[in-house]
Length: 346
Image (cartoon, rainbow, N blue to C red; front, top):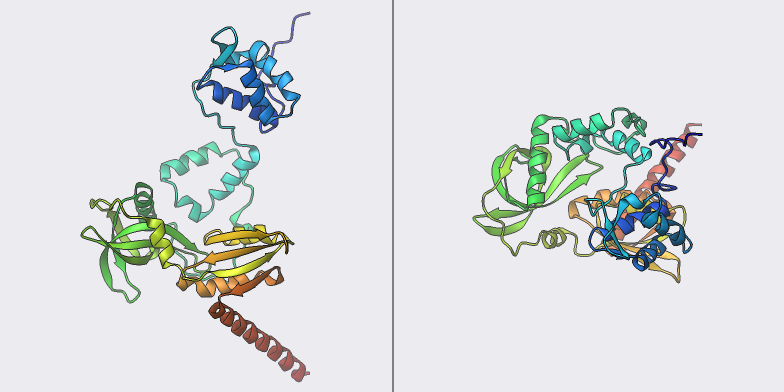
């Protein structure tokens, strides 16, 4: 009987591509690309990634078994990787590809890529079904005059701002103020900020004139008519994070998060765009979270916090708590006023 020819379909190097076997072999190959490994080294690496007994099954296959083509013997008891790369990234799963395909239909997601990159992504994911459609979502309590994400002028501005941020360059911008006044500004970009309520991007920056660092400045990207990178070098002492935090409210909003109904995970996702510090309190089985925010976002933050209901408790500061009480009292009066009107009508 002729032996069965091994094909790609029935060739199985590892049990699961994201399982412990794959991670163990990946660790061995990555370490073996830098320095030859002994049997003791390989056993130790496999044990750190997989089960204790896994080493006795994996190492012999790598040194003198069906996986031995991955390693090359360099001495009597040492081996090195045959692969040219020292970084072995696992391929994307079908679920990950499906998620990326869904993101391609998000207008905001497309801003972060060039047309060439988007075309390549579309081609690579052409046969992959999208995990979800944009029509599956309905946004409420959001203004309808969001930024024109699909406009060529807006995309060009966004790409230039991204380059300034990634390359740490100053930026010249032709800006239209709220009253229609046009001005030319030179700024040091610090960070892009997205407002879900306004559906707009803002650029947190610092004014920059003749090589001198000025005060924090917030620019709406939709009002930047044109921009280009400045040739003026950025001062070495410039720390963008320090200027961002200095623009935040001096005293953060402090909240207590209950350990129920996935409250912590929901809060971390919902407030991902805020600077925050979170500490677990084992005595109360709760998390204390401090949220740093821009003063212009105070009302939006207040509404977002109230939407979580009883799973969080707002602790301070007192000025913020005063606004919370006033809003809750107003909602209470409106609700019971409407109920009373309904009863009177009958």
